[in-house]
Image (tube, rainbow, N blue to C red; front, side, top):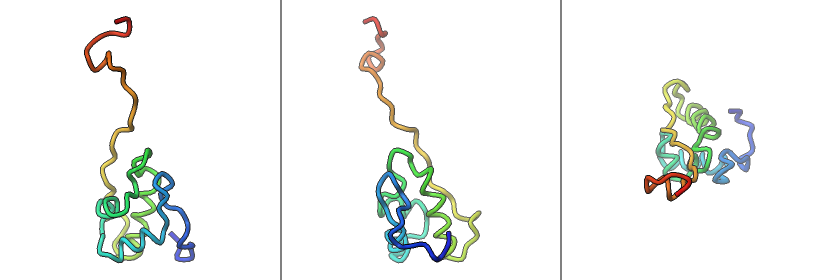
Amino acid sequence: MSENLDDDIIICRCEDITLSEIRQSIGEGNLSTEEIKRSCRCGMGPCQGRTCMPLVAQELAKITGKPLAEIPLPTFRQPVATISLGALGGGGVDE
């Protein structure tokens, strides 16, 4: 990520998290993508961090001086999908 990026640029579109919020979280001692995810909800929206977490990892690498390959991404969860009550109760569609 370029050092010239504006602090107001949105990193996590799902949760409306800016680059300055990511930098603030890192400044508070959150030095992993999991810690940043928990501190500011970045990566907890519908995309589950598939878009923003690589950007967060790049910022962590830049600030900590670690190679990007050494910064693990958080676990991605399955997307939320609707399920019918019949499916939960073991019934079929016709019931």
